[in-house]
Figure 1 (cartoon, rainbow, N blue to C red):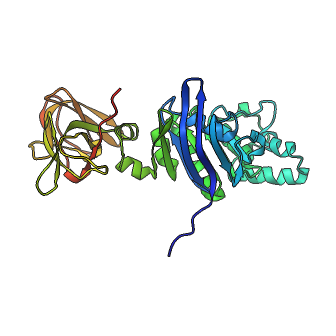
Figure 2: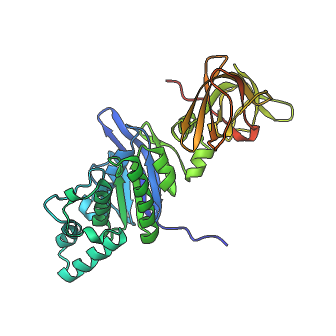
Figure 3: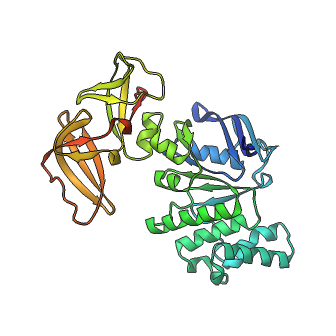
Length: 365
């Protein structure tokens, strides 16, 4: 039985933005379904914030069409687009109490006082902060202030919420707590959320779909596990997760089996996702957690000297210097009583052929 397609909340049709000769966003098509949590991920200057600002109406596109909830919103002002926004700096009014901050957008819409009181209380209950309703923002922690900012956004029930690096000012523990809080609210409310971040862990944790931006265009998009396990480019592999990238030349035997001939040896590899022929340059990707340290070598292992091992709580990350000067990263779980190689040991990093991936080389320049 075929599933009924979910209607789009956002549709970008050939949207681009230029500032003189600078192309902040190249021609882009993107659709976000109603109720979906989509993250725009990428480094500074990749176009993710430009894309968010175009959808919000804070800047006008140089070309293309923006449709929000079935309406052409290309030229609509922000306050007519039916969306809410959450920012990194909370944007709470310091002279108002928590209750008054959340009530403000309802007062602007001239709702009756009784309805405002009910909606604010419901929003406070949703974020589990009813006990701070009479406090001022300065009396709250950063995490509490961001939850109030989120409550002020959801109190008037927008169909779409845009979030621009909302957790960037929080420490690691608070940020992780807020990630789970936002995920919970998304699941309970079913609101479409478009989230901007440069933090790959945040994107992997929260998203239904990640749109990875690079150089003002979409590099790759898909579910978090798809981008992590099946990157299509070297940029995707390097930006999402840690990567061992080994360059070489494609070889294909008489049975159609692929291998990569490299400065460190010849390694069997799965068939690439994109067409490649013998003699093409390519890169072999192996994630650090798919490598293991071994005393002896095999067809898919590389010899080297253990330079260092770093304890990262639940995992240990090893750095292996190879004969050509490159460094491989091997990651293993940290367990009580763990014993292993020591700095300076000659050792091998090994992997299973099925756990590697052939990628086209990064574009020159």
